[in-house]
Amino acid sequence: MLHIFVDADACPVKQEVYRVARRYQLAVTLVANAWMRVPDEPRITLQVVKDGFDAADNWIAGQVQPGDIVVTADIPLADRCISKGARVLGPTGKPFTDDNIGMAVAGRNLLAELRSAGEITGGPPPLTQRDRSRFLQQLDTLIHAIRRHCSDSNA
Image (cartoon, rainbow, N blue to C red; front, side, top):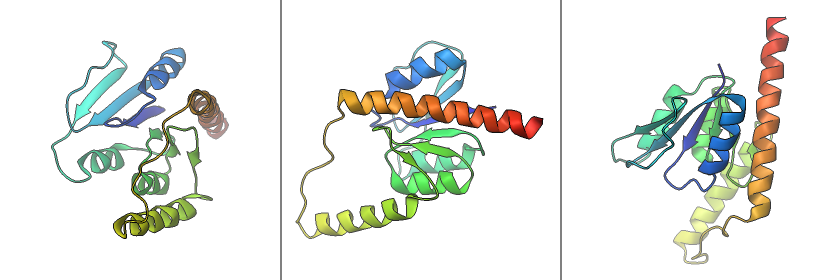
């Protein structure tokens, strides 16, 4: 069954995920390094992982199944989840796919080199309302695509 995993520590679209999950009655697991408040609903759970480099990423990559959705801005995590057959969506509504993950990884590596050389000192721009709308639209589209694929496979 379709499950949504959220790399939750810095995720700015948790409320949007809750709203869509309620509409489609989907299970959501938020994975974080520390406790956070989540809605008191049976389909929404919080998995707190031990502090440690990539602990949340490792937990998500270990749990995700083909046909699940992962919400993350973490490109290496997106790459791992795609390789397991999951669909991955960034908080700005940009889907990570087999077709674009290679370029995303290369861009991430280039930016890391520029940051370490002191060429870039800022982070990503703040999320806009347009980004939130795109995220909602893309999440809805992914859910429909996965459900169509599942019903085609069962036919």
